[in-house]
Amino acid sequence: MMRRFSGSMLVIASHNEGKVAEFAVLLAPFGIELRSAAELGLPEPEETGDSFRANAELKARSAVELSGLPALADDSGLAVTALDGAPGIHSARWGGKERDFLFAMTRVQGALGKSDDRSAQFVAALSLCWPDGDCETVEGRVNGTLTWPPRGTQGFGYDPMFVPDGHDLTFGEMEPEPKEAISHRAVAFARLVKNCFDEK
Image (cartoon, rainbow, N blue to C red):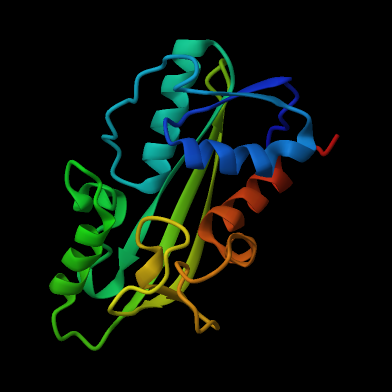
C-alpha cells in the first residue's frame, strides 16, 4: 500500500528554477505550500547514486534531513541504446562545467558515429520522502529516436535531438503543453499522484 501525502508543506529538492516552476504547476491542484531547496538555503548534495531512482531518493532524503519537512526530488536524463544507456545519470555532466547542452548533444552524436541504432529513452525518477525515513519512488520513461542536427528551441537539455515515438517533432520543437502530456516526467508524476496525492 502506497503512503498518501497529508501534509500542508512540501520542499521541492531542486535549485533549478525551471524545474521548481514545473512542479508548482503540476502540484497546484493539491493545495500544498511549496518551498524550493534554494529558497531554504539547502546545499545540493553530491549525486553518488548508481541509478536515476537512487539519485532522486538521495536528493529527497538530504532535503528532508536538513529541513525537517517532506521533500520531493527528481533525477532524469537521456539513455541511448547504442551507448549502453549513456549518458544516463551523467546526462547533465556531459555538458561540462557550464552544462552546455549543445556541447552535450554534439558529444552524443559523435559517440554514436555511424551507428544505425538511433533509439533512446528519456527517463525520470521522482522520490517523495518523509521525516520518518519513508520514501515512495516512481519512474517514467518515453521512447524515441535521436535526430541530427538538433531542431527547435523549446524545452531544455537534449530535447532538440529527441523525437518521441509516434511524433515527427522533436521535444525541442513541441509547445510545452503537448510535450508535458507525454514526457517522462509527466508519466512519473501521474504515477506519483495516483500513489500518494489526493486532490483538494
